[in-house]
Image (cartoon, rainbow, N blue to C red; front, side):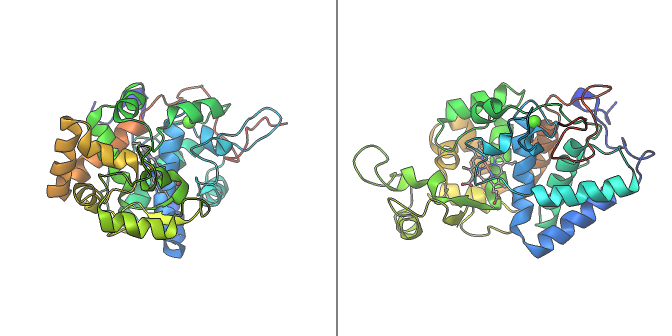
Length: 312
Ligand code: HEM
Ligand SMILES: [Ca+2]
């Protein structure tokens, strides 16, 4: 059955139990993105950081409590991940319309898709029916989410563990066509990359000089820079064109071109053909969204995405 993806999810899951679910999510995401364009990027990333830790189960949304050590304080998330207030607003609207029905994990998957479309990216049908976790894993967040200074083999391994392949690595890295990064995530490339005090030689010289302006050797850790230096608020394929021009921001972006012929061929193909990128991005988002969902009677449908129903 083509409607069923991995894990038994399907797009019509709420068609009878909460027919307005998709519209409600879309309208609140649209308001949030209208207020601040970057929120589209933040919501796409939130789904990624959920799925890479124990699967797409909304574990990333849980706050600290007596029984929960929140993933929000992990290295990849601390001072970086955002969008929780928008998820709260969506959840409150859904609880008012169909109480106890739509999971926080499905909210993240729908919000990521709606965000992508709102900034010019592709549409895909979102398989639904995920349930919410009864726990979080800060250790899983620290170890499972790729870091910007990981080698390409490490990044590929972190994807493969979750059933994702090299096409998924490159297509999903294209998520960096929108949004911002802190100086601290790429500073290493600007100074002393190889112990000689010089910038990473794969960086375009004038781009490196421009980055050094706002990202000094020390201080300014939280200064923000576009991941796509050309069109950071539009979902397009400039991310890949930038990599070809030595203007990829993160080391993890740049290595896609220089450390493997297979990933380099994909970078070039996506830079040449935005439709191919959109098609692969949509499919890879579905693949990522299918990572280890909780279904049936596993987990629960949280009433408040920040805490378990049985909280202390
Ligand atoms: C391939 C491995 C990846 C690495 C190493 C990586 C790393 C990073 C880093 C370091 C940042 C900046 C964080 C900060 O400084 O605050 C970032 C931002 C971002 N990432 Fe990734 N990422 C990866 C894959 C992905 C994937 C798969 C997606 C989604 C499909 C994604 C979407 C985003 C978005 C949209 C932002 C901007 C968020 C915002 O502006 O709030 N990334 N990523
Ligand atoms: Ca998770």
